[in-house]
Image (tube, helix red, strand yellow):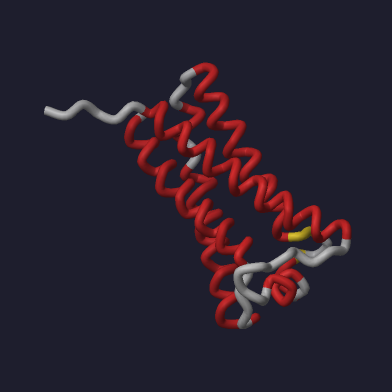
Length: 142
């Protein structure tokens, strides 16, 4: 009989992935506020995405929403590491699932409406997807 997986290793993976997403979103947010375009070395198109009407919601850059999302994910994970209360993990899917859906919408816009590829946006979409999957798994563990 196999033992259930320990939440700790999954929470550590969650923290690492959330930190990657946080750093990615911070770079895009900082680029927005200093008026610089993100450096796109793998594929061209980051500038088109960054300058599109979909890069902001009103005056707020979408990347800043990402910074806030990843910060909340990090805080929740660190709370669990500190006090080991299941509540810190149990409600993560209520944030990660909508974030995943919003991220999927942004990827759709990027590919089919803007018709440009932003590597940083794909990093964010990937980290959000992984955070959602891990949060759903953690919910089952705790």
